Figure 1 (tube, rainbow, N blue to C red):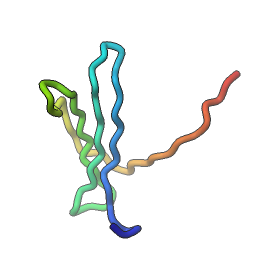
Figure 2 (tube, rainbow, N blue to C red; figure 1 turned 135 degrees about the vertical axis):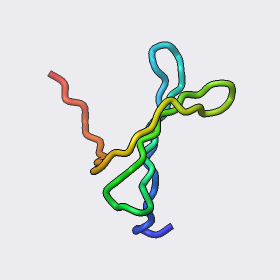
Figure 3 (cartoon, rainbow, N blue to C red; figure 1 turned 45 degrees about the vertical axis):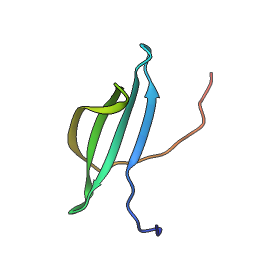
Length: 68
């Protein structure tokens, strides 16, 4: 993998009901600005598709939590 290698972005979490979920942003090979947003849920020992759509201009960052 090189610095120019495009990678998918993945966020996994457990919701309040205890269900494991993930959202993946997969780059489109034919367009640098478009991604497939894929939402999945963990059921029966495998990820199952909930929905997907095409999105553009994905940004990713983290920041410290601001307390009052």
